[in-house]
Amino acid sequence: MESYDDHLERAMDEAPEIQGNGDRFDVPEADVRQEGNVTVYENFQDTLDRLGRDEDHVLKFLQDELGTSAHIDESGRARLTGEFGQRRIEDAIEEYTDEYVLCPECGLPDTRLEREQGAVLLRCEACGARSPTGS
Image (spheres, rainbow, N blue to C red):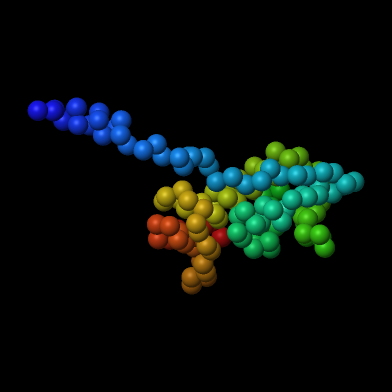
């Protein structure tokens, strides 16, 4: 008669390999360039598409985080007053992602922002969690 350990070992040997990767939610690398005293965030639209958030919300966060003014040009690029390197922009986008995109309960990006009694909540479509956000 097989022992528990024998059964377990056989089950592990026969279990299919799970192909999913455990990578973090990936946002496109920021493509930024200097244009005089302005930093142009070339692929801002791609970032918005990946985050699934409103351009005004993300832009306001960037402005607050970087302490600058900004606007979106006719091509969908964010134009930030001042000189900001790629790493600084990516750090700000990562902070935005942690605060307003990823569920603090399950870590998935399947969320949406909801306003309830003046507060902004992050509602997770995957696990159903509702969490307060910074604003």
